[in-house]
Length: 74
Image 1 (cartoon, rainbow, N blue to C red):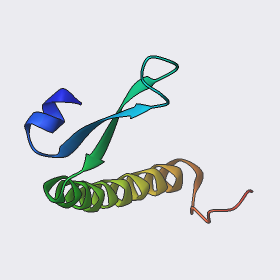
Image 2: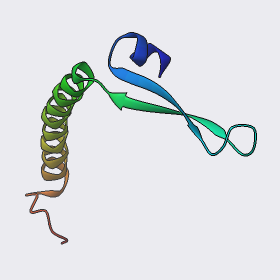
Image 3: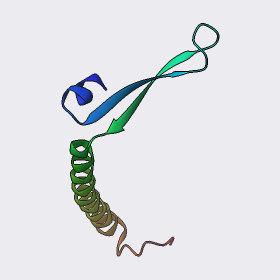
Image 4: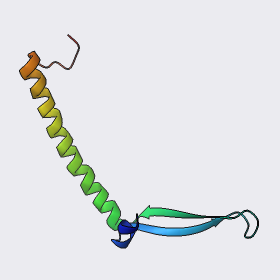
């Protein structure tokens, strides 16, 4: 998280919950920056391409080893 914050992908915010001196708790909230949102969208697109490629490889392996891959049970 620290590296992503340093790189400008995440924004870090400290908040206090409860009453000071009684039952307060410090929490850290991380949010994506605009740079982080762009990086996430690029990553999602890259993963979609890779997953589609893997699905193709799996279908070919099934077809090569078990005949035509229909996607259903035999």
